[in-house]
Image (spheres, rainbow, N blue to C red):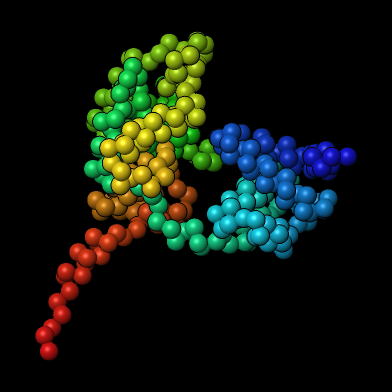
Length: 304
């Protein structure tokens, strides 16, 4: 019997629960596929032991078994997958504890400063958005770079989520948590314009705010492609950015950095980003060399 068949037979309900839970939680297709693969490997390591009986030692043992072929970033992703798996089981009353929460994530990843664009670089990037769907694509870029939305959150925006009268946008984030974001005035203007010019959807029931030229909800991959094209053009004229791995999520980093550089309270930044913990927001409190030099100019060393 193939290993996947063994897994499906031994862990039918846990795997089904996890699949439903991820879909309900709004995980992207790529994340669902990756997390399910990680959980399959973890369950194989249990050797048919009931998941309810597995403990911290089983989780750590599995992570250790992958050390030779995986780096710290991969280890953290694997741990996140297992944590989510047990969260699903608890939610569906198939388990009572999450042993993966007893295992700490690697600190290596947290020590790395996020990649982000400076405020002027972000503004310059906007000038490279052109073409037939300029207003739509510009609005998408603005939502990630000036509101901090994740690519999946942009993808999930429906017409009803835009509250023009209040000047806010309802955002469905991770864990299916809703967050109401106040919008900058210029972005309100762009959203209203895009709403008026919205491509007629193929299906009358389609509620998506952003529609592709084929009349369907703009996919995550399409949004990523739009953003990648802008970055490619930006780098042609600004070679100092060539070594930066820019992406949709880097726009979110840029937004968070912009707020903190403007002395916005980190607790407010946490709420705008939709983070569950302020520890996650702390990664954006990086200090650059210019700030270090500026701080040192305030020090008056006495002459002796």
